[in-house]
Image (tube, rainbow, N blue to C red; front, side, top):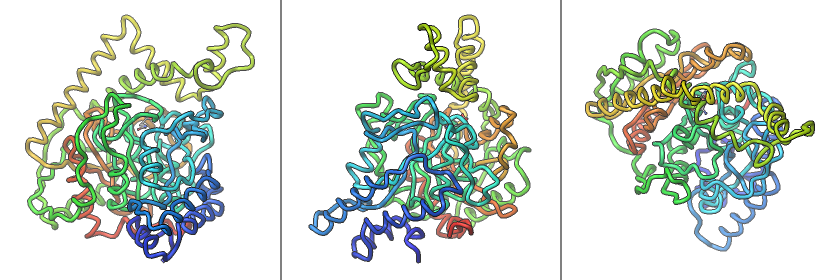
Length: 488
Ligand code: GLN
């Protein structure tokens, strides 16, 4: 078996048994990136020298008999939304094209400084994580390794393309309205967005602070659980981080799901899904029933209001968060300005792409005097109703199952001229962000040769149960083991 086909646990075992070194493993990925990434554009910054140095440190420690954690010496790639000290952190934007972060995000410290993982580089993404196709990136679109004429999904398109093509064993990602789950579904990966507050947002460039959550995309639930475990936990540097012990996510993986109560929200199974997606998701439901789960229909009556609610709340928060990108405090500074007002206008006009500008305008509009009550306040009320729906649902069921996307990955350009069509991509994923609950997507088949994912949503802080259900499903199915043929 090739090194890049190994699970993280198998990699850790190979390192421990000295079958290969961290340097060899790291070099293997660097070679694959050199060979394949021109086709995909998944990396925006490679940190090859630092990666090999970090690998050597891991190898030396091992030789000396110093016990590292399971992940020590294993490579990972980071979405370019996380600040990495001394390494450019551009967030997919011209605005931050020359921004070198002066400190690292908490999750970067946890994965590298604490767990001893090796950073291969920074991954492409939609500009400021706004998008569903990776077409808004200043660094150009990322291609889907399953079909390079199609989008990988967004905004974590670089993360999924790199992992699906074997250019990284695993990657971090973020999810404000679906950016972990939708791209995972489009590329046959397992992606999890934990409960809001579970993973620190410190050093993660803010898009919509009350919705943003960091997570992971991986080739299996077990891999995802290992990384999420290492990322999770209270962080005094993030005021929305929750002080609550982290469950044993990996150790919790072997439990039977006999009697598990799964709810199918009828609003998610109405029209809208393609026939291919429907048949794969139905097969997944049948599989979970065969494993002993008890399935029933539930209702989340306000779920259809998720997209309009999100497109008030998210732009409002984004317009405020992005105010700091003014060419003075942060970001691109125009060379053309002749006075202060022009400096702001031109710096922001040149630095931000069209989708980001659209969101800023929507956001400032819904927050402005006279419109605030009609839009922003109203959206907050609906958000609360969506939260109440989930709260009620979890009194009756343990997990909620739904499709992740309406269809398989679409072609480049198909939706880029129609913002609303693009926004509707997240119709099944956004409610989980508005409520703050954990949710994941995992592979459940193929439609016309393209991957299909289904979604599991859990109650607050129920990541361990969610991952266990996903793991049991993956023990019984083989979809997640399929890789795109061109990148074997
Ligand atoms: N596609 C959604 C948007 O464009 C969600 C993005 C995300 O989750 N970061 O806002």
